[in-house]
Image (cartoon, rainbow, N blue to C red; front, side, top):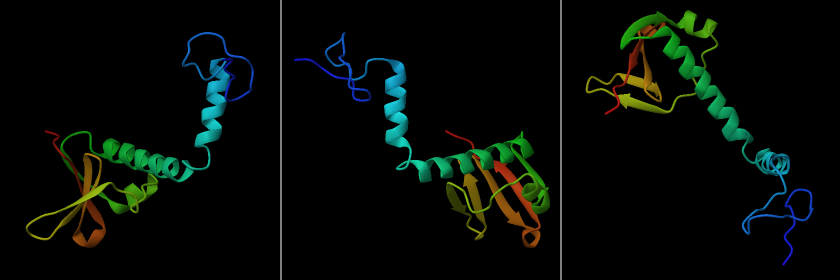
Length: 118
């Protein structure tokens, strides 16, 4: 049985489970396959990655404090976070993976924390 490349249709030589004639066809096929269906996920992941980098830059240690204005100037988007944590006192921490922030002083300042991964 003759196998054909899923991207360009040329005859495939080599392993029995091979699907593409070369790396260029494999990449082209996968890029087309993932283009539209994964665009929303890619956009959200890029925003989360950017927020993470911003929090990490402002908080290289375990905890610190910064202003809302500085976070906004760094292009931080408060709409994107991965989880929340509510304390017994009712304060809500917002986390982007292990980097977290807590609005304090009426939301003009933020306590930045790093969650310890066990």
